[in-house]
Amino acid sequence: MRSGIVAVWDEDREYAVKLSEYLHRQNSLTCSVVLYSGPEELKKAVDTHQVSMALVGSSLMGSPWLYDTAHVFLAEERSASEDMVYKYQPASEILRVIAGFQDASEKESVYAGKKAAQLRAVYSPLGGSLKTSLGLVMGCLLAEDRNCLFISLEAHSGFRTLFGRQYPMDLSDLFTVVREKGNVHAKLPAVCQSFGQLKYIPPVIWPEDIREAERAELKELVRILAQSCGFDEIVLDMGADMARPEEILSWCDRIYRPEKEDAFSLAKLAEYDSYLQVSGYEGLQKRTRRILVSDLSGGISPVRLNQWQRWEQMLPAVRGMLEGEAGED
Image (cartoon, rainbow, N blue to C red; front, side, top):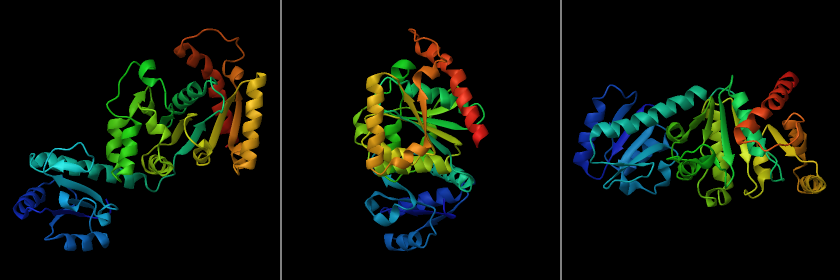
């Protein structure tokens, strides 16, 4: 949070007084609690950056001056919204919400001065090129000694079937948080899952959430994850369902492109490279490492393998590739 004030205001003055008195007595808060007499006085404090968090009545929903400051609306009814809390629940639960924002903000400040995560994208205009497998194997290897996050940007990732899991929250929930200018840091621990040492955000369940994702929302989410969440590496598995993937690739430090060697695949790759040249994205080619799919299997003839065997087969080639890059750096 930006400074040391938790601002309290509600239409019900008596309620606001009692809530602020309760919060003031709590030793767990590292911020001062200030009760404001009206929206005008509160707005002035927010505009001058005195307020770290506003705990205010729901009548202030839609006030644009609130949205650059952490805020929670005190709602008359229960709501699943990230920025609303039921005002008549035990005050200890409201305190828990405030503490969650506080912890997330402290985490953000700890990482604020550190180097941003390196962004690696795995993308190919070809289907069936082991793209997701490459991204997961790479992420697992990077996670052996670095804090690595894997994000699938595919409409149909197959994760739920492959891992035999259902996820209570996924990437769509983080898109919603960004859209509503909520606190990504507070939501992230509940969304992230682990695959060995690798952290990953469960992919969307509805294809429309990827196909219709606003580019600004995705860019802001990636910015927050890379700059202030403590990750050293982020691997993006780029799906073909995203419009203009080149925009996202342009944010990345390294791009990996699995390629097949049959005539049709080579023709498609040639046309894609021509497109990059004429569309102004020719700079992507300098950051792209072209990887033959046959090399990922160590030259072994293709056989019918289950997914776990396929990943194990790919480990030596991907490890060698990463070690070679480390030597270049």
